[in-house]
Length: 292
Image 1: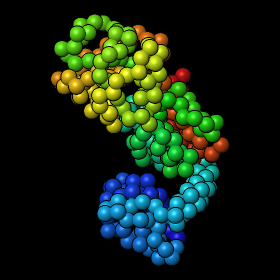
Image 2: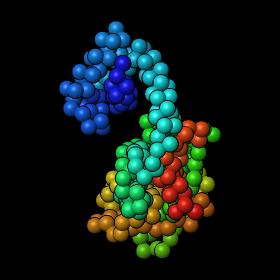
Image 3: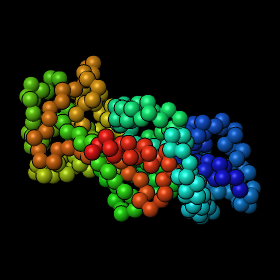
Image 4: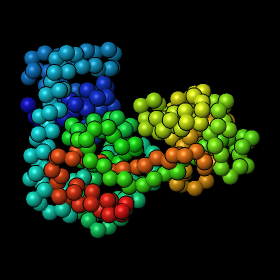
C-alpha cells in the first residue's frame, strides 16, 4: 500500500467527502477517487458506505482507519527521529491552530521565525480543538496552538498568550456606553455562541454558571468572525476574545468582562513522548522563549 494514499484515506474518512478531502490535500478529485478505488481493490472490499456524495466508513473501513492511523504514526516517528539529526534550519513544520488564531497570532509568530530560519517550510491546518488534539495524537501534525489545554498527559503544553474576554454587544445596546460589564447584567438576554465542542463555548458556559444563570442560546455559530457579525447586526450578544485587528465596520461594541476568570489561555502543544524533528523542536523552542 502507498503511504501517501493511506494518508489520503484518513483525510477522506475525516471529511466524509471526496471533494472536500481533495481540496484539503491539494489534489484533483479524480486523482483522489482513483487512489481510493485502488486501495479498496487492494483490501478486497469497499471501505465506505456511499450516501449521495457523502462517504461514511463501513466496518471494514473503520478497521483500516484504526490500524492505518497507528501505522502512520510509527512511520512518522521514524521520520522524525531521522529528521532530528538533520539541520534545524531546513525541513517542514506541520502546525495546526484554531480558526480565530489565523488572523493575528499565527502570522505574528511565523513572521519573526521565518526571518531567522527562511529555509523552514510550514504546513498550516485550521480546525476545532478536538480535531486538533486528535491530529497531534495520530501524527498528522507536529505542533498545535489551541485553547483550552487538551485533556490527557500524553500532550505537552506551554502557555503562549492570555486573552481577555469581552462581552460583544450591538452598537445600540443599552450597555454599549459602559467601559466594562459583568455577565450578570445580561442574564436574560439572547446569546450567540460557538458550537458546544469548542473551547470558548466551555469557558462561556462556565462563566455564566458562575454568574448564576444558564445562557439562553439564540444562535449557534462555527466561527468567531460570524459571531461578531451577528452581534453587530443586533441578533444577540456574545462572549468573545478582545479584538486584535482594530475597529470593524458595523461591528459590535466590546466591553471587558469583570467576572473572575474571564480570559482564555492559548498554548502550544505537542505529543510529549514523540521525538520532534529538528526544525519542529527549534520552532517550539522559539515560541516558548517568546512566551516566557
